Length: 102
Image 1 (cartoon, rainbow, N blue to C red):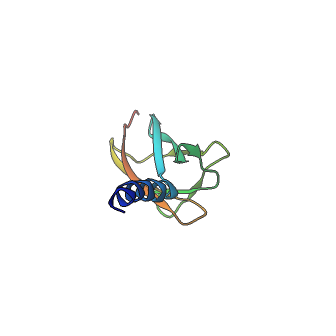
Image 2: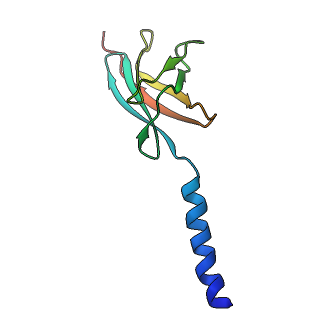
């Protein structure tokens, strides 16, 4: 019975962790803007709602490739907080440095 428990517990933990989604944000920055890509376990997430702490109440929606373009004209080079929420209600937040290039 002890041997079976030693095998079953790690197998159960492995199976349960793979059931959890791994929502993530990826960035490509350029002149006061960022391309933001939302993925779930590496797959693009379409129709995710992306917001920042620099664009007021505006929400950006990802395309079929999980990407959206966000222009932040008033940024004076600094960290921007990005948050994405998918249609299942899962969310992820990350900070990204955006450079002001006037």
